[in-house]
Image (tube, rainbow, N blue to C red; front, side):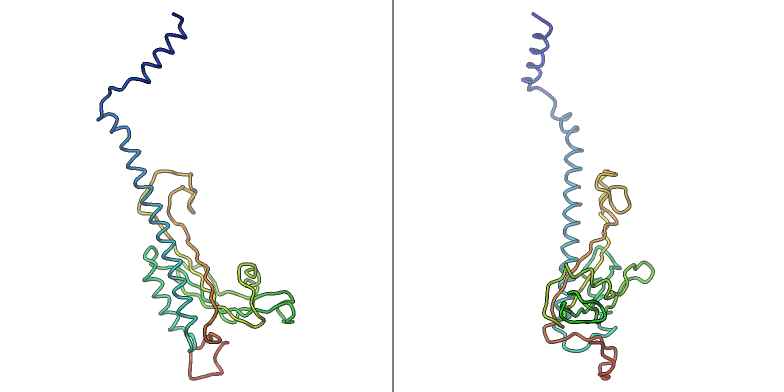
Length: 219
């Protein structure tokens, strides 16, 4: 019997062998099973936090689209409090609310001759010590034209943007695989950005800190 034949028979016997110790097999597979379970929980929780952030932004946009009175700083502070309540994963999310007016290319404006959005007003709410977002400018809105719907000339829309930071409660030990924002590959310090727009339901949404003073409204 040749060496090759003996090796083939030995491998065949090893493949067909069914005896073993359950405890040893469990000890080998248990860490893999436990890690898989934690990874499933981590990814499920991350997607859940993202969905909550998206729904919170949609809620804010819907509430503001129904508003018939002027939007004030106090109103926006209340809306930001609602965002903090809904997005449990971040105690200090960032929020930017803007009202944009559409100009088509037949409307000659100082901002340009192409189809573009003009910023009527824009306000930001965040933690002053860590917030990075600034009020939206018309020059920024121009770059968003492709992301926003085409509208009739002078039509308006409300744009709600939020930034929520998420850190997973589980350390999966997979550095430099997913490449988190801090570069260690864990599911942490991920910025979940939402981008929701809707049209005002009752005309135009004005920014007004003094509702009794009509001339102070920004519309």
